Structures are given as structure tokens and as C-alpha cells.
Image 1 (cartoon, one colour):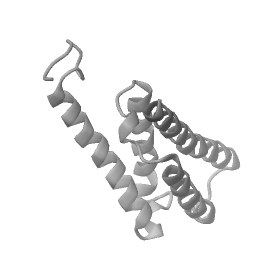
Image 2: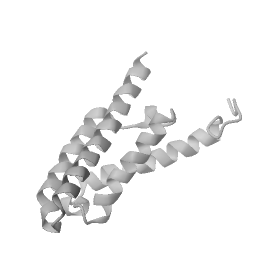
Image 3: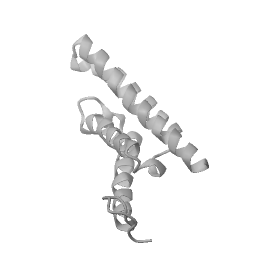
Length: 128
């Protein structure tokens, strides 16, 4: 089809590029979640980067750009369970203030939940 509009994502090439970017975000999260749990502890690179990746995917999905390329909601929920279990068992070792710990937990849970909701919505849209 080529180009169908003047928007940044209204051409085959742009969508191919976006697909590669989204694929990389998803693949990196999947790899981090399947790897050594130490790698996703709160003070490790992927412990910080995984929520960032999920937030980026959410922003793209909300903009209408990433819906069909998201993992299934069940996969995201499994990631949440794994990630939060590691977070809960390791966060106290960093001696966070109680308020930070509570607020950060809320943000992390919301981050996973909003992406799972995006994935469910994308599944509904595909079925329609």
C-alpha cells in the first residue's frame, strides 16, 4: 500500500520501523523476565529498565500504534507476578523509606496492569 497519509506512522516503512522498535522492547523484557531473577532486582539495570519498557509500550498502545504487537495479557500478568515477587523480596535490603516503598509498589503494579489492559483491548479489537 505504501503511504496512505501524512502522519509519521502512515506508511509501510514507518510501520515496519515501529514494529521493529516494539519487538525489541518486548523481546528485551521477555529476556529479562526469563533470566536470572537477580537481574530484575530494584537496584539492577533491568529492575529499572523493565518498567520503563512497559511504560513505553503503553504509551505507544494508547496512541494507537502498538496494539497488535503487544504480548498477550496473560504473559504480562506472568511478568508482573515474577517481577513483583523479586521486588518484594529484595526491596527491603535497599532500606527504602516506607512512603517510597508504598508509592513505588503502586506505580509498578499500575505499570503492569495498564499494559495488560492494553493487550486485552488489542485482543478484542483483533476479534472484532
